[in-house]
Image 1 (cartoon, one colour):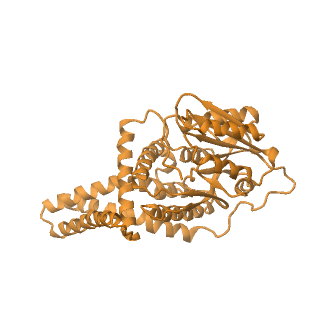
Image 2 (cartoon, rainbow, N blue to C red; image 1 turned 90 degrees about the horizontal axis):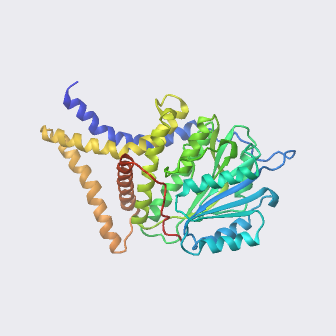
Image 3 (cartoon, rainbow, N blue to C red; image 1 turned 30 degrees about the horizontal axis):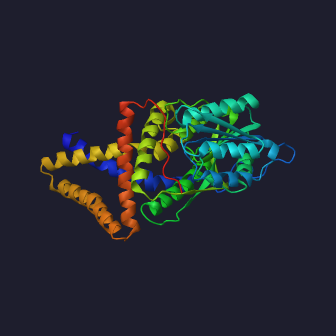
Length: 401
């Protein structure tokens, strides 16, 4: 095989990976997945409901905590079985006072005000340890891990608990309904992406409990599947899902448990969040490489196609760009034209969207393109951050509404 053939392969591999992971793979899963869940939809009448400990790490969440506590008060679950553990990661606003007021007026609420900023993973580890000290790990003890800005419907805990009537279930996420009150900036693009991800992950769960990682804002975990999260890890939800797979458990999405989150409309804030998540993705990719490589089993195929390949796309596109430049240098006019068209579409239309956005004109197709490019650039920067080494898991929440 000549060098020209190698570079021609590299040129097409990046676009082919995008088409496969974002277009072809979801359609294959839709064809393969059964329509009905394999887990029971009702909790057995002769079994007591499991104990549920809700774990919530917070940092400067005063804007959303009153509404969050209101939603928690409305949860339809036996009061003696529901316990709420909140850990504040050295919050500097009114968060601690709000949580203390809530703990004073409601039984079953434990508050831990940590003075040193350590990050979400460390807080969740401490909360889980405290919860297991009060009630041992086992199938009758579930964790629900939630973010402060995610608001549940009243049945969100009961529906997730019902999932664990299946003995092999290790983790179940709720169905996120993205809210877009502003309908500006990138919010519509983010909203559509979340919806597509929710559909895909639900079908992966139907495909034998192989969902490739939960939505981190509201998901449940059987307590005996919990493993301490390395404090420097940035993505706790995917880490815990992979721990469940390592222990032989199943991971699903239960659409009967619904929660709501307002999506971000500011590109800069979402870019920064994706940058952090990108570094965490590569941490997990390397930590759990045996689960997805080689992608020959059904589980490895799902993980590789949905997650690993998408995380590698920015790197593959750089290789495609380099290959295109090499082929142009080798006087291949076809590839020069293809490269010029690709750059014109990617950069020209993104700049056009920026201009229209400044004029108050929002075209969804252009916005989706700029959103896709920006999020992949953030993922690439996350890769470089991972290469430099991530030494702590401290995070800065996006602006809450």
